[in-house]
Length: 200
Image (cartoon, rainbow, N blue to C red):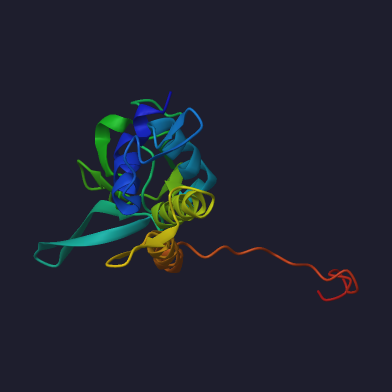
């Protein structure tokens, strides 16, 4: 069963990919139920560990500054269930911050404290999702279904022509559109012919 903590993100991705619960079928399996969308999302998940979140200063008058809002570099976080298994904050001493002292805008990755944190550093651990990358994968799967026999053939009569293959092309174009907005993937490549120690 799909995690309830992903309900909001699942609905957003459904909208991006125009994916209903009976979008198409392969054999006896209908696409896209919540479990299937969750599996796609999990393939586009970034696990964030102890990220120092940026303090946003708020001018309170008289030259004073207070710190209520803190911003992550990431967005579209999975929501917590009220505990600390999915999303939590730690202070500089490594102690978990009580969830009673802050609220979270999970899509924006923004934490708002109920009191001025007075410059106290906080570190975020959570799961961030690339919704555009997930939508691109779903559009590619929809295009693959059309190409593989999902009524994607053209036909014509004397007075009319139906080009169903255009559907596949439109799906491919939508996949490219969302791929263009997806997070870049970065990997580290080490050369085997160079000793990294010798470079230091």
